Length: 68
Image (cartoon, rainbow, N blue to C red; front, side):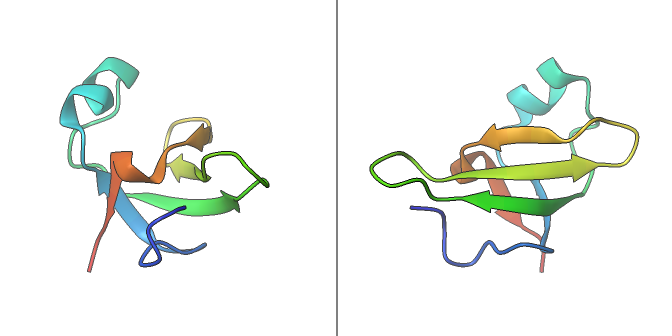
């Protein structure tokens, strides 16, 4: 299940900086959680929108950390 600390509307950054670089997103760019998915029997995923990038859909929440 998704980290309970991550909810729709939360601001997040990549916890995996290597993935941010592969996707061409600045390593400390902040994104916003725009969707949460918890399908029955499947891993929870999140949709995250970064300014200047399309929405990243169905990523594992463990790849992000919430910005406080």
